Image 1 (spheres, rainbow, N blue to C red):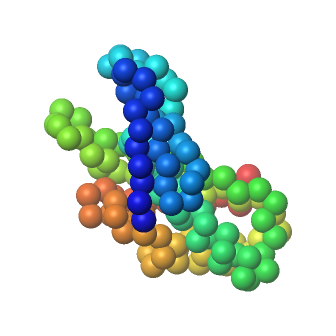
Image 2: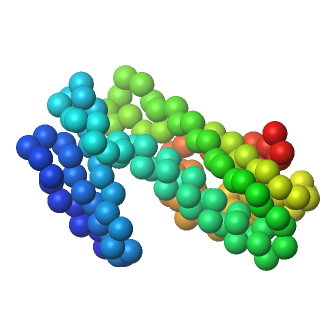
Length: 138
């Protein structure tokens, strides 16, 4: 896997392109001179965690013939304060499903993702406590 990062302006706006060829924009906060033209790097870590697990869960539930009408994840990260670097200490993921779903199968799919398949979880777990909850049909 390879990623290329190119600086777009004279501040903190970058464009990253990976093996997929899809470009992502990254920028710094306005209080450090950024222009709010892209995601922050630490936001991208949480996005990566959410999407990695979401792909696992969809693959598992599709194999089980579960009908997913809507699927969203909300991720909240709490970073260590007063230290540099300030990594995530705690991360909580809320899995939100709508559809004709068996709650036991959904729980099993999420458990498998978080405990066995998700590489992003494996990367972050040594330094952050990762918890999760599941909501089905509101």
